[in-house]
Amino acid sequence: NKMWGGHLWSPSYYFGTVGNMSKEVVEKYINDQIYNAISGGKPYPSPH
Image 1 (cartoon, helix red, strand yellow):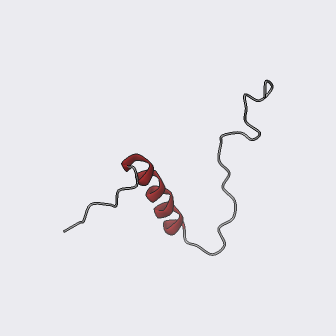
Image 2 (cartoon, helix red, strand yellow):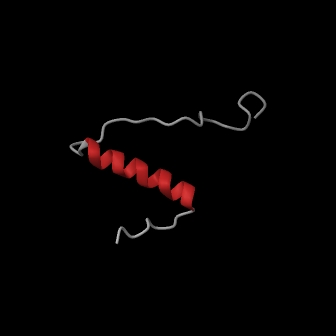
Image 3 (cartoon, helix red, strand yellow):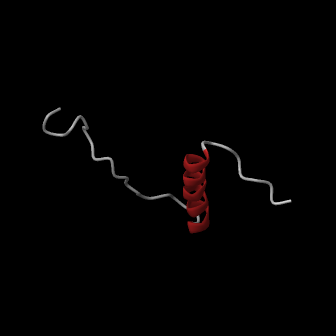
């Protein structure tokens, strides 16, 4: 605990292979995660 400040792993992220998903699908997923974190899980506003 003293050596690592209570963390076993680094708080950074790792991005590996995504199979045959397109870049756009991965970007949308990441953007959705960011939006959900910022908005507290509220859905996107309706575009209409």
